[in-house]
Amino acid sequence: MEGSVIDELIFSVSFVGIGIYLVWVLILILFGQDQKLQQTQLKEPIEQLIILVPALNEALVIRQTITNFVAQTASLPQVKMVIIDDASSDQTAQVVNETLQQLACGSKVQLLQRYLPEAQQGKGEALNWAYQQLVEPLAPSLRKRVICGVLDADAYMDEAAYLRVMEHFAFDPE
Image 1 (cartoon, rainbow, N blue to C red):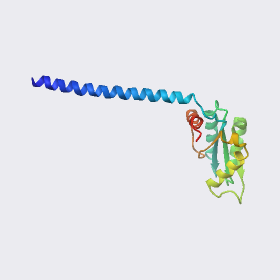
Image 2 (cartoon, one colour):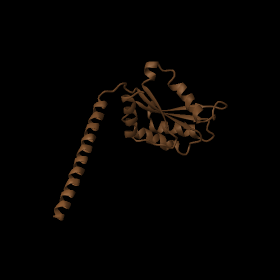
Image 3 (spheres, rainbow, N blue to C red):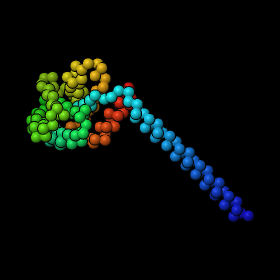
Image 4 (cartoon, rainbow, N blue to C red):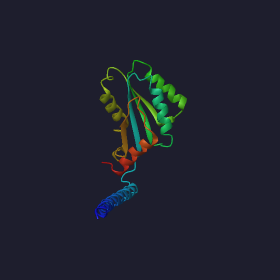
């Protein structure tokens, strides 16, 4: 008699556990379908993703950053990198120019240079200056379809990460 009560208790607990598991799987399936539906309803297509890279004395790492960027974005023509040389005292600008010539990446990577006394006022100042040069001159309708991101001179992203950024903003521009 005592064994059958334990068996019934184990069966009941197992049955409830399986029920909870099935409800959880159903929620995951429904949530996944909702995400797929959202992907088909883009609000604003992304015109361009501009990655701003402030660079002050980054000659040792900037070549690898550019090389990696060009490789990871080869199939993403709307992704562009802008390196902001903030009056570096090393050979950062020279290394960037040499790398751009070697890679022949066209307009995929651009170098903007700041000069003293306006330069070296901080990363935020360099980024704001670059934004004013690149994005503010665009027509308002185009400007709202351009995303500006920031990476350090020694940072990397893969192709999937760039795609996720663009998809996120295309689905929800706000």
